[in-house]
Structure formats: structure tokens, C-alpha cells
Image (cartoon, rainbow, N blue to C red):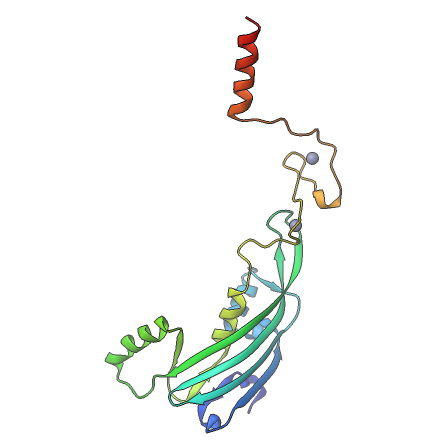
Length: 189
Ligand SMILES: [Zn+2]
Ligand SMILES: [Zn+2]
């Protein structure tokens, strides 16, 4: 098996036995991740370590294991870049879709999607796409460098994780502040 194609599996190799796939790749070698890195939307602080065992079961192929990497993200509060370890369990199920006609194809692919199956044509399974998708799914919606990140001062913009700034404490604002003025005005009458 060519090194370059270690993640493109020929299902003929799965004939009655498990196939172990292990590789350490730069994230840029995964088509989806490479495009995001090139667009400066994602950065990785470590290679992608992938470890999978593939088993064939009639027209289904199951790939189970894990993917580990470190992604560089900007904190949603303090805006500092930090490294986040991603350690994602993988359980991918591929469905052979080669022996069906094109008119059935759409329907099968729809069914496969509903069942969380990944359709593949011919005898080859390209693991790169689904692995890249699983890495992206592991990204937090709101990345935080630390759950207790204090963020930036809304006045001077200082990173409050490095210590307090010199800004005065904030006055309570909003409808209650207006009410307070109104009440004290009524009393002085
Ligand atoms: Zn932060
Ligand atoms: Zn401040």
C-alpha cells in the first residue's frame, strides 16, 4: 500500500479479516482541513494521529478507533490563541453503493445519510473526508482558553487574566438605575 494512499482502503483487502490503519499526518494532507488551513480559518499545533480498525460485514464496512490532534483556536473571551487537544472516538460505517443503478443511487444515499452511513462507490473507501469532518465536529462552538477565562476589560481592552486593570468599577446601568433617580427625586419633594 502506498504511503500517500494509506487512508484509501481497497475493500478487497478486508476479505474476512480486520484491517488496522494507523498514520500520523499533517492536517493539511486531509482535503477538507487543507482547504481551511489555506484559507486561514483553522491552524493545527500538532499532526493528526489516526488509529482505526476496519471490519467488513456484507455490504457494510465499519471503521472504529480514534483521532487525536491539537488545534489552535482563538479564545472567545480574551481573544488569545491557545492549543486545544482533540481526542475524538470514531465509529464510521460505510455502505457499498456500487451494485445499484443511478436512479436508486439518490434514494440509497438519502437513506444512508439518515442512518449515519457513508455511501461509497466501487471497491475503494476514502477515509480522509469523514475523518476530517469528525475533527471539525470536535471543535467547540465557543472556544475558551480556560473555563474561568476573565476576558477583556470592556473599557480599556486589557486581558484581565494578566491581572486587574485600573478602570473604576462599573456603575450599575439600565432601567433600575433610572428608577433609583426617579425615587430619590420623589423623596426630595
Ligand atoms: Zn481566554
Ligand atoms: Zn480596564
